[in-house]
Length: 223
Image 1 (cartoon, rainbow, N blue to C red):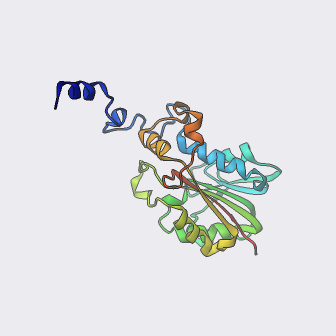
Image 2 (image 1 turned 180 degrees about the vertical axis):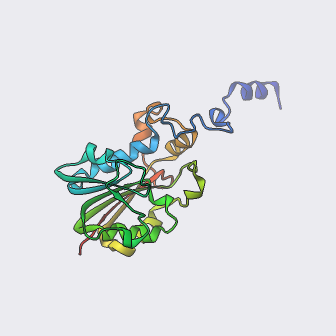
Image 3 (image 1 turned 135 degrees about the vertical axis):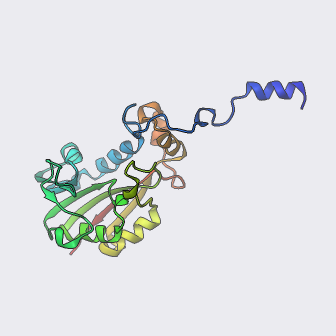
């Protein structure tokens, strides 16, 4: 190697230099730095379907997204498996049919939860059962993410094809809309623990189906 080539290599930034780390910038998905990147896409997904968040609604853990995006909500319920959640109005395991009320809700907001349930097919089937005919399920699942701290409960990462097939079993493919959100740069940023405020508008706006960060599913119960 000539002296000129050596000087050029030293001066040229090494690819991914800022990412040559053995631990992320944030251990809590970027919450301590701003808005986690996946939350940006969850909000974008729900904003696009806010007309569905009406009537009697159900959400997991709390009613944050119902409160933010609901239009004409008449009753807001909260589902949790943990009796210790004082916000919960329904204590049930989504994968167990006899714990789930039938045809009770107009909209079910199910964000970033299904990957924590091993029997994911039963959970989707029960999400179908608890909706009124004409009711809408708005679900998001991770395609790329670090493992949750309670790793024994973190079971799945999904794609557009796998979600299409899973939700079609209960709702029918013709009643299921599936799309991906994210790109190479946002997947890297999320794994690094960066916040969306640390990326540019153009970086956050681009979606590349080859590099999905989350998958959004809108499924309608027709009968």
